[in-house]
Length: 217
Image 1: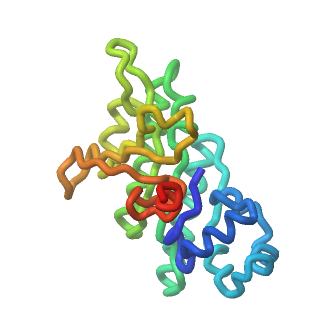
Image 2: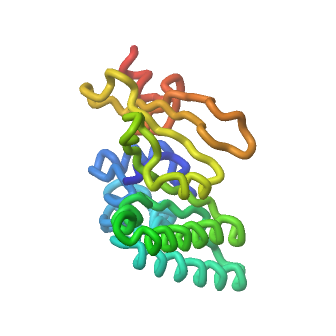
């Protein structure tokens, strides 16, 4: 579930995010389900509501629906490029584990084939259509070592070009803190192991977050 934050789409500023939150709209799903004209009037957003309408949420509950959505999107974006109209810039899949994991098990060969087909569709969007593709994956425990590892196994580990691990800060879970540790675990351009603490409520570092600054003063 994507949290609304400044810069998520053109015109979505921090001030607008705060206005939306005051109306109970905190996530992308909340925004997609809301009447944007009514939201714009209540929050005084006027023309900026047009930017919010560019965020689209599509529900896909299995891998076949997911593949259909991605293939339709690829065809639509290709047509937009030919017509020189505005194109999709970012695709967020949340989460890939939900549609792939039910296929892994008894008929593993078929499940792996479908998982790789999904990977090819996502890579096509990224490489051929210059989109940013963000995919969330879950963590699971290794049965032998008991350590946490990314779900979907080794086969999927080769799919993403950049991997970021989002972890709860030890001792922060009970207090409901939105602070998380972000660690770069795979990258073709940056050294791995780089870590940063962020506030996922505003997606800023603690030093930059106005919410945290207010709590500290």
